[in-house]
Image (cartoon, rainbow, N blue to C red; front, top):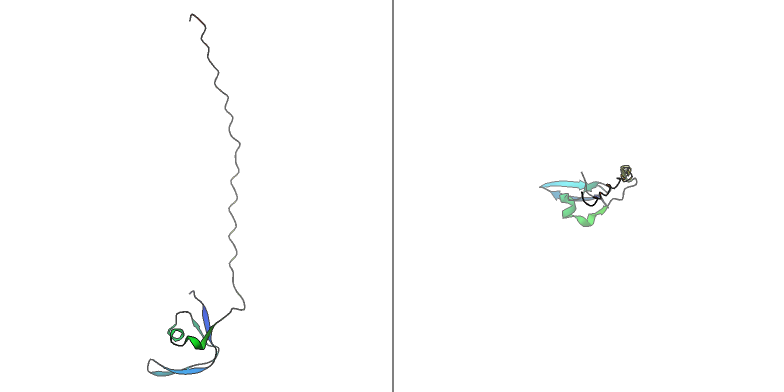
Length: 83
């Protein structure tokens, strides 16, 4: 589950789906919940006390560069005159 978490800034009661509902101060709801949509003024975003930040993945070690292979030049062939 992802999304921001909100908490009720005060206790309140509403009729929800035909039944009385009491939301106490400090109760939380995740972003997108119908109560937040209907009563956004009664909630505030919850700031986490402890935030989890996953450690960064270690970088893959660089492949060592092999030195370029030296290739001897082919000998130049010279034809003797008359052959």
